Amino acid sequence: MVVHKRKFKLNRFTTIAAMAVAATTIGVSVSSVKSQSPALIKIDGSSTVYPVTAAVAEEFQRSKGNAVRVTVGISGTGGGFKKFCRGETDVSNASRPILAEELQACRAAGVQFIELPVAYDALTVVVNPQNNWATNISVAELKKMWEPASQGSVTKWNQVRQGWPNAPLKLFGPGADSGTFDYFTEAVVGKSKSSRGDYTASEDDNVLVQGVSRDRSALGYFGYAYYEANRSRLKAVAVNGVLPSRQTVENGSYKPLSRPIFIYVNAKAAQRGEVRDFVSFYMSNAPRLVPAVKYVPLPAQAYTIASQHFQNRKLGTVFAGDAPVGLTIQQLLQREARQ
Image (cartoon, rainbow, N blue to C red):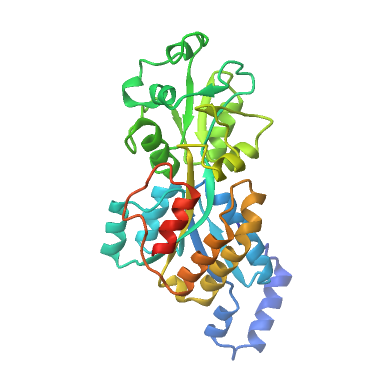
């Protein structure tokens, strides 16, 4: 969470003093007391997008002198959309576009939204630094590791590629509520949510980092920022001969595991001044904060378009309930410009 609650201890003196103050200010209305509480913006969703939104939230709160409180949770893209479409949150972090069933849930609840891309991610395959054999892996080999048919049968590294050691294959990955899980399974296995189940799963990428960093035989996948923050504890694996980086995302060579990441803003919440200010602050500062947390910023044109969409209340999604694989930055720009 971005904001932490402070705890105050009461003693006899403070209690009596408080009673005295209350006695002299009995005319103060309840509404005026409530008005002194900070405005609240509730955000939940993707752990991949969390570092960006948390960085924005920290700076935004400081810019407002803590007159606005922003909470940022991590329940995964899917879990975040469940809350968002029930009207429980103002903004939803998402590491993939909203899907058809989520669109239906939002429509059923009367929740309209504005879709805003905020950055690009290089979904990163990682191993333990002591792993001296897996420096490059093909998409076909990743599929062999992760497809449902491999459950209980592909359990050693040498079953994936001849010449790799006869060592246990320990897999770590996002849980089923994760947008990263959805994207990876679509890109690698060929069907969203199609995965073996016998692996260590978590919606919190820090848990996956810990697991891979402690086991020489481990392999996992998650957002690029979590790899960059733990480079001394992890080793990135090239996919089809290409390592993840800002350059390989921007030139389109890191595929199919580069992808746009988003925030979704509840249209009704966007009528509140603090939410409008937060989203405007987000779009203005994303070009600086996105690379600071080790994701790939969008071109300036993309943030301009997103800001215009927010100001003009452009509702809905440019993806029609689908989550395309391998979308380049230029292709994303073309979609956004058409809306």
